[in-house]
Length: 120
Image (tube, rainbow, N blue to C red):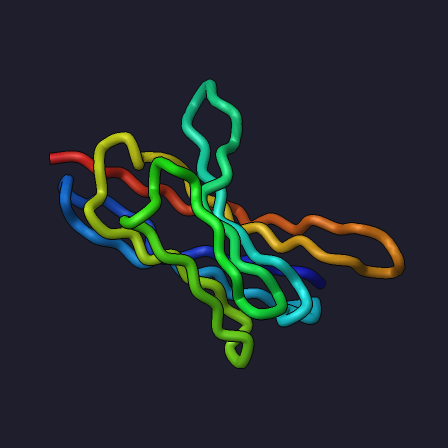
């Protein structure tokens, strides 16, 4: 059974930091590209950061470049999102995503989301 379980969300003041974690199980984690998305009410889900399965190359949304860092630990089947210098506009539900191939076809797996609220 595939599972992605996010943790680490919460309430933080502007300028503060949070570290999100996503623990994966039920698939070969090291072979999957891992991403973090976020979504606010009434808006489409937005790609925040991606880390590749080979080489660990990363990409970031312009809005978070220089503030957020995505990383992965394949030994622990976990992907992280370190968020620094948080702003109120970073408030959203953050989702973990795994993308790869299984049984000869492309697959996408999603976590349940974790709320991040940035407020004084």
